[in-house]
Length: 393
Image (tube, rainbow, N blue to C red; front, side):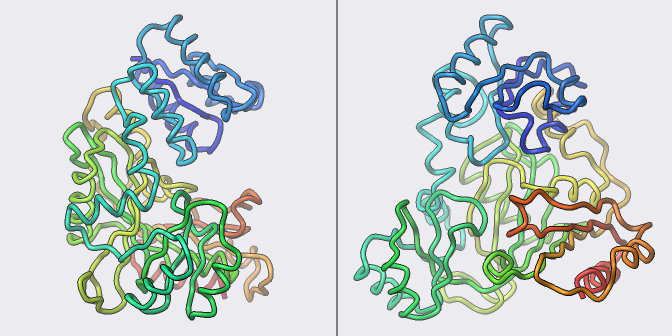
């Protein structure tokens, strides 16, 4: 089996995916814009060959790289990047080279555009916020009159809270239109509540080979208000979220993928959407969760999500055993601009046995993920909450 991995050197999860597939005798072929010598040794050992391009934005270079691999190794079974930014490139390459697995170019818009995702949610009867494609001020005012404030304005294509605006009043709405974005935006009614993810690896029948959930406070607060960061992976996934995640996966029909869906757990009742405690879908991501989230899944469930994906790609099924031990895995990260009660030495002295990671994050991640992160696992939610309170006090 030939598997082309786009940008295996960034983000870091590429190393883990490539290593696991190589161990299952998958022929992993890398294409990236990082010089070969800058790749870590584990990744180098996992790749059968690496083709350097000066820019992954240059489609002609990437096309020639794929053509070279096909000429040398034969038919390609997979082309993946596991990266939101490169999903359209992945789809175009699959189309041009008739690769079996994964969405093609004519299917990609509903997987990356929030406006197109919304149509799938509505057609499948999946609870979700009302949405309006941003055009002019008059249309924005009409939408606000229908839903009321606050509103959320965000790029039609985008990841996380970057470029997202919360509009609490008509004055905020006017200010938004006075600095009208240069890229397509959508506007949605604001649904208050925690963000709860549905993460899974799907088999050929869109059935999950494992399922997990992370819980976050609203990410927009962490980015725009400079709040410190805390979120966690639960040892079990609630039945109602599990059912809705599975329904959403089948509505899109994208089998044999690592998926990351985002839901709001409603803090209050919303007519036509749900009651407090119910879930409403925000968006789907047809790739793994970012950052350290896959590692948190592994710590919480005592599994190897990278290995389970590799088994799906190589064998079409899961071989990795069901876990016996489960935990809450917490991520608590400090941002600049805050004074903290406890020093790093005190954190390590008290929680050193529970920590599974502590490190300074890359500067690009500081706005959303904090500057210095501590990750730990616990048997109970009470212990986890005490840890977060200690780190972030």
